Every structure is written in structure tokens, then in C-alpha cells.
Image (tube, rainbow, N blue to C red; front, side, top):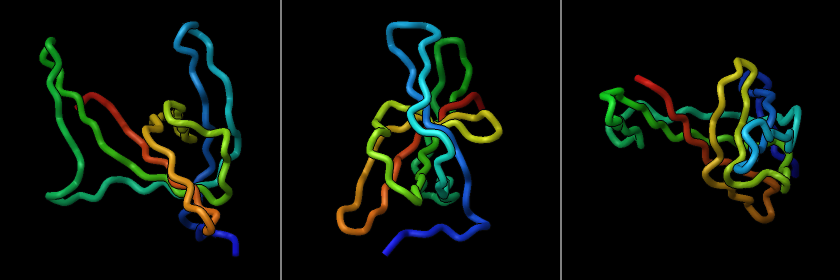
Length: 113
């Protein structure tokens, strides 16, 4: 049985990999990846932190989840999910659920508050 995302929740993204050695080294790992990106819940138990840098600028970190309609084993921890609005979420974990053909990406968003 194939995992399907309802049409109203589908989002098409691109997964990119950046080179740690080259400043402009960026490669597309997977294009036109259909997934459902779930934002963190707005509750007391949500994993959302605010950190202050030395310069006094508050930084927000929030943890998101993406479920892929079709698993792609070339996607690795450390890659970035690039959305249609050019925002990026860093992949901090990849879970492949054996037997169910579902791939879950654990994502981190970091930004200035």
C-alpha cells in the first residue's frame, strides 16, 4: 500500500546539499519532492527555544516534521529542504519506517525573532 498525502496538504520542495569546503558548493539532491510539512505545535510542550547571541539578537529555533509521499534514500542528515517561498529548513534526522514505505524528515528552522 502506498502512502498518500491529501491534495490540500501536499507541498513540492527541493532538497539541496551544501559543501562544507566550498562557499558556493550547492547541489540538488532531489527535486520535486512531494511531502507534507507539519509545523511545531503551539503548546506548552512544543520544542521551541529562544537563544540570545552575544550581539543581543534573539534567535528562534523550531522543530518541524516532513512526511514524504515517496521515500528517497539519497536524502541525508545535514541536507536542506528548500520550499517554494525560498525558505529553508535543515534536515537534522531521517527516519525510514520499514514496511510502511514512509520517510520522515526531522527539520530545524532557525531565524531571528
